[in-house]
Length: 189
Image 1 (cartoon, rainbow, N blue to C red):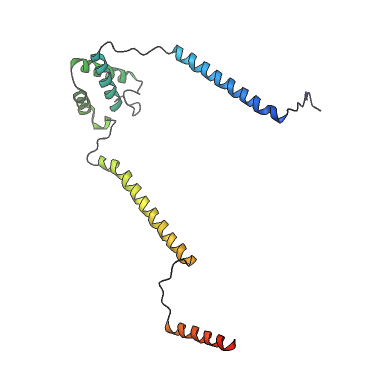
Image 2: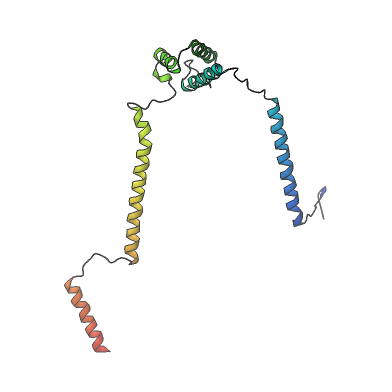
């Protein structure tokens, strides 16, 4: 059958699965090729030459990830910020670590100079303690409300299905009316 300029090619249903598998295999092979090529072009990380350099680098990493840059671009840690100020601060931190200062001394000096708003890790003290506690309190409250609502709806469904005896007492007049009706029924039969 001809449709326009191209012919319609009918393909049997049993050929669809092998073609799909072939496409997936080619896709995976291409993915591995791209990943291998990308990894080959990345230069290997420079490894510290001795233990002191490794300690300085780990301490520097801790510092630059826990303190914001004061440059004013955006509120980013020194590790993420790309401005010259962040590079200068990182170099200063490295020099101080090599001079023998501790991470806490450098961080405290930096925060005393520029203010506590540049500390990227919120300390768990004072009003900040609420930020750590409130999510747990809210989850407990939501769980309690959900439990109470589900329990009440279950009690209502049980009562409406008649699975539980109602706590209502029948009045004497109602009992007398039922007995009278029952007696009348017996007399008729």
